[in-house]
Length: 168
Image 1 (cartoon, helix red, strand yellow):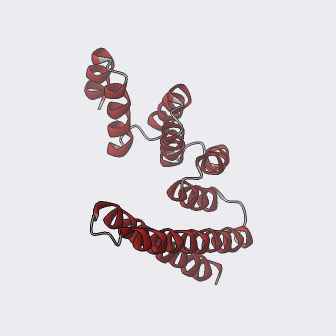
Image 2 (cartoon, one colour):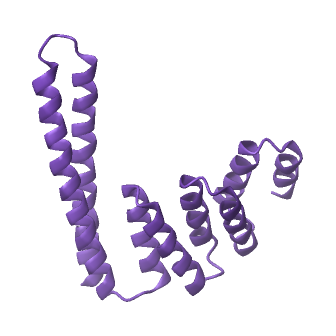
């Protein structure tokens, strides 16, 4: 029952996000237009964005409450962290991913998500440590190998890129 409710709550959050993105698109179209009517269209789009963002936050709150009923497993922490990351709440996402890694240290994907959240905050050292943990936990994961290569490219360390590629 809890999983069904969590799925429904996640769907509501996804619908609210889609409404926000649609309103954002209308705002961009209003800004691009130079027909003299962009003022009202922009105000309308901003109001729609505000309403959709509130719906998204409310849906996220429902998702959080539903997952809380499921307990604090690593799966629940990852699901909630992913929802936070999608909403741009990176500090909250990092907190959830750290808890997931503590509960399931051999689950490399949880460490990968932690690394991605750190990257979103431009915390390169923490991201690198989380990626190292992910690679140790799941050495054969193409997603983790790809994230390591991306990080090496971002730091423009060609020797690290070569070492990472050769290790995979």
